[in-house]
Length: 385
Image 1 (cartoon, one colour):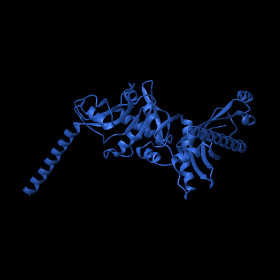
Image 2 (cartoon, rainbow, N blue to C red):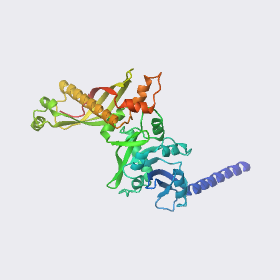
Image 3 (cartoon, one colour):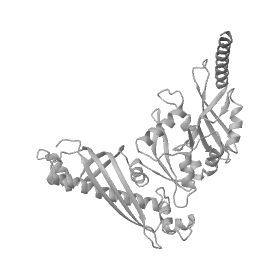
């Protein structure tokens, strides 16, 4: 019995000592939660690190370091001299690239992240609308324990809300390494004391080419991944089409229709299914089918929504509106020679006996033809007549 008690006491003591050692070890670490990269006039890298420091004696557990070097690893060596905490990259949540640097190409920096065994492939990547340093050092109106973690949660929330494709390291590497598909990343902005997603950065290979807004992103995302319930869309339809179906009491709506104004609808709870097929011919020709089930959440004028004819009219007009928007979005992608949807990969499937290089696809893509068909099913209106 005594031997058992002594053994139990020894084990408890060892566990307590191990806990103390672990706490002491963590207190010596500076966990990198975010990293930002820019380029100076001498083509040297400027690196900005956001650290989380475990130290009960410190009020501010966040620390931001900036340094210059020729490589990303060189930056870390330089910045390690400016802190009494050993830098560790195992908790990296997001990597941000300054706008000018992204325009020059980021493949080498992304490759460095991939080669770091301490960094997981689910790290988020993003582009700053200014420099990454300015974004990460931007004074915030609200105090956060760590802005690296905050930015990660900001992006994750938008991914879960189906407003963007998950901009993970793995996703970027896959798209960049595939012939016929280009990466797309969120564009982070700073204003009025807060940080947010202000748009999206389209890439051709590893170079940032064009910024788009959330509406263009809605159509691009819908042709990459299906919407499962969180998607939402505001659509401005010609009021003329609904003139005869406005509430008799809504005389102002009838006058607006006569002036060519628009009737705005907000659709949410969107479920979608898309299909992209490439024709077996030399010149790329694609057929795009998009089926959508939506709920009408809001409309700016009073419509007789209980009337089946009006219900069908909303479905038809909204489907035509989305078709035109998809067509114009694809045209914009062609003009900028960016293919985030992956039409080139689809085209490769019908050329299985022939290889397709990126250069060949770039030349073919600009003249590709597209037939777009959208079918909308308005399941619930969510508004009263």
